[in-house]
Image (cartoon, rainbow, N blue to C red; front, side, top):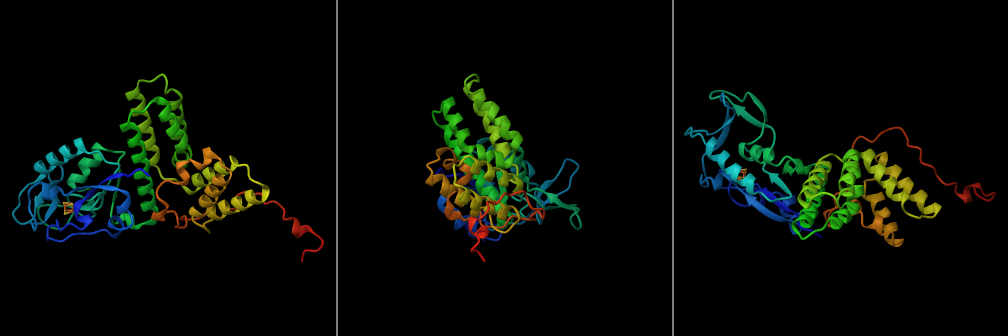
Length: 336
Ligand code: SF4
């Protein structure tokens, strides 16, 4: 399987680069995820030559916007950090970025902004370096290690970095329009689960594959694909895709009803997505149904990461119209 290239705040990998000489090793990043990705560690404060250990920093108000200041010596690092971020953003070639939470340099949300004196006036800011990277790469998959503790956010992030990596691998190679058409065919259900409108737009782009210039085609498809993957794959859209895949299999009534029942159990929050998706994949393999079997939706990342095992949030109450095939034994005169 393709290996995503993931930029990461160096301290999350266990490197002792924090202001106090310590680290913030992330168990998920250095444990389950590590065998499947290639890290691109970045510690902006060390790259700036601030040394370890070093004085703490904070964001401060100014008429021209937030400034990155050393707390005690009152050095303004804004220009130097902005220049470094600009260089890094220009050369960044990654499928995702995991930032360190709560850092005035690397944090992606909730960073306090201080007036020169007194308590913070708001806590809705990004770290200065992270802000530049995200502004330059709005469709990059980004998270912080705190949010990756949430099962839904973790799954969404990992799905995106693997999808981005597959597309990067294709577009970095000597591809032809028909290769992009084949890529799109394998990713149709995955895109549909995220955004039906962008699914249709991506379909129109590949339909014109033979008429567009190669660079224009690649740019248009990559933009649409990444935009779609940035949207949340909702419960309803997952149900829709599962039913869609099921409809493409030639199953006998018993197996079809079993699968429909599991899809409904997923819809009402009784089982995780992995349950109907695994059975669907099993039937697709058994039938040699190549189109369904090869859908990235059914194998978006290595199974060993065990990311689809959480129950969906806020299950809807109303039942969907699932038709159950009558069990002949229940209507037989001998059944109890
Ligand atoms: S939060 Fe960012 S700047 Fe601070 S130690 Fe970690 S990587 Fe370096």
